[in-house]
Amino acid sequence: MIGFRCVLAVAALVVATPIALSVAFAQPVPITLGTASVGGTYHVYGGVVAALLTDKADMQVTTQQTQGPNQNVIMIDDGKIGLGMTTLGVALQAMQGSAPWTKGKKYDSIRALFPMYDTPMQCVALKKSGITSFRQLEGKTVGTGPKAGTPGTYFPLIFDALGMKVTARNGQGSEVGNQLNDGLIDAFCFGAGVPVPIFTQLDAEQAINFFTWTPEEIATIRARIPEFTESKVPKGLYRQQTEDQKTIGLYNFAIASKDMSDAVAYRITKTILENNSAMVRAHAAAKETVAANAARNTVLTFHPGAVRYYKEKGIKLDPATLPK
Image (tube, rainbow, N blue to C red; front, side, top):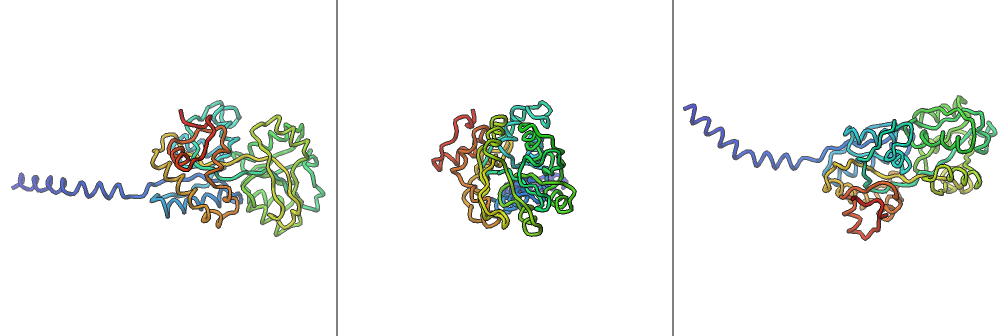
């Protein structure tokens, strides 16, 4: 009798196994997306990416607030998140192991998926401070966002490039905005997809000045930090910015580990780039999240799954970014 029951149990398992396997394969792919702090564009943009992938790509994507690009790179390399966002400047530092935050380690496991948007650098100060130019920040205390974010990483390098002595203060974008409101810092220099949420808030609540650099200063910065490209913050994004401001910027890309399957990387890239209207409704910066801007990447190797999508669309990628 016992033997008969065992045979029935085994038979039941054999019958059930295909069903169980089909259910398992039907489960959405779980992925954690690293974003950045509240007050910056990554936080808003990342929420839309997660919602789109969950709704349209049969994935279960959740966001995790991080300090920004540097930490996203580290966490992808550690396998703690599956997706992240970074600027190409931080990606270059990561691959070379050249910046202090890398501690000499070369992060060669990260791969590019899809282009996001440009990150123009810009500063803001309260109008009553009288600060209207970058040179006036000499000897001042300036908020630069999270230490592991792109502005937190690059503004100290910019100060050095221009031979300026400035005290940089780090914190979440919303926190630094509050410090400016309260007069605890002299200016707030930041970089994110425009319009930057915290800058929009400051523009609505305070009399402020927006400023960037002179052409000569931009030339000096780019000579010292060549990964910067020319950029612009167009007038009209903020109520109190009435003219275009020329500046420098770094392009943003979504990244994943080289260990992500080609099929998943392809599905992520295709889903985001073919739902641009939904992205733009959430944040204006996403108007740049289009396949053609994949060519803006000249430093970071693309994931093979993403390359498959760009080939289908006839997008020519920089040869230096193609997987070997």
